[in-house]
Image (cartoon, rainbow, N blue to C red):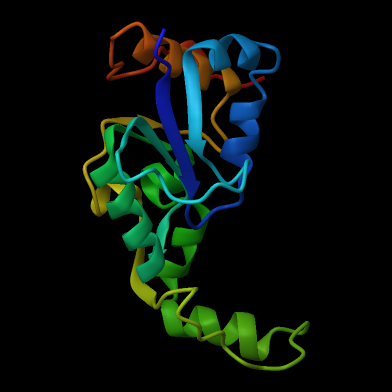
Length: 181
């Protein structure tokens, strides 16, 4: 049986969504019978393969030029793109900087905060240039499925992935997958 190729990556976020994906616990063994993770920050394999994957999963908001490049590359190299978590869906916590503006947020974080030591705003090609507005992934590329939550529940991941493996693309996930105690 040919395994479905899946690539994941994270943008501006906390990695909590990937941890939630791992929270499917022992079901991950069953998942790995049908899925090959070609690249993921969890495995430290970067970039989806050039020959493409069936499913691409992005976590995190779009806040800089590097995030835009990663999102576009993932979209180009996957058949189905899933945005996981509130950051990838709506902009989430990183989008809070939209209230004060990028420069004010950078000044406060790197020049004015009590914990600042060297007082330098990072400027590296690796980081990319900050965007004026933080957005969800869907503002930059076409997304086929959104799984909101901070982080989404493991059962939401399980449902979405097993539906995809069965040849069905869920449009809306069942409500019970988004309720919390």
